[in-house]
Image (cartoon, rainbow, N blue to C red; front, side, top):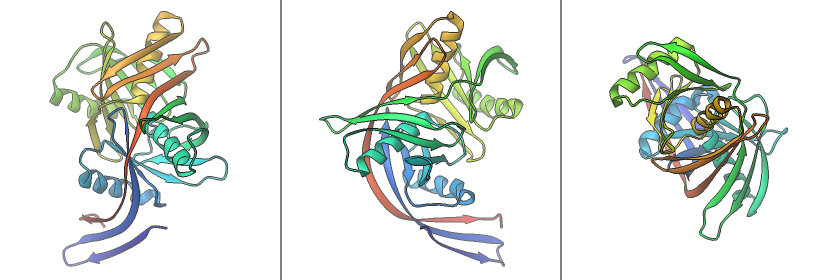
Length: 282
């Protein structure tokens, strides 16, 4: 259980927070993911996530693992969004912890009402390969957004992805991510800069509840969104590998629209730390 201490400095109207947490750091195609293995109340997750990302600056996201009697493991992202790469990491963690080298894992994941199935297998070089049955998009529509005009938006339960086929300056893209997230009333938003001719993807993800905006090395749900959009546009099944800064992710969208993600994961290290946080908001 979480070992936490909270003390209030009333004179300075500040909250001092300390929590001891255990975690595992994994690398799914460069999208460095911290999985907190200590049970943590939801209300404390955003601040613990922020501190862990400060302590481990190469990390791009934080998820929290817990037990669920209805499945093998449960994963909640710090902002409550859905994440395919973190889902694959959670499956790898569960199988490795059990001492197995190959297994199917059924998970409860934030941002998805239905359980997520993943198959993972350990490789001789220490990495893991994984296949995750991703949620189908709730809808794919074209939306007029300020500064971009008419663009495709792929809507998942926990995150929306805007498919951008024109480049944008870094600062401008980050500004629009925040604006469009409010405009679309999204829990989280991705700007997926797609170069379809060269099969490349450059992902930017903004999660307002965790106050994180990140140019990710790879984005599983964003890759799924881009391939689902291309499949819907063509009216036919599509299997495509999109090269990203951290490497390639493969998504196959079948005739019924169900997407499957394939990728690789490496377990980097386990750790334990006392997370200290000072806040002016009591």
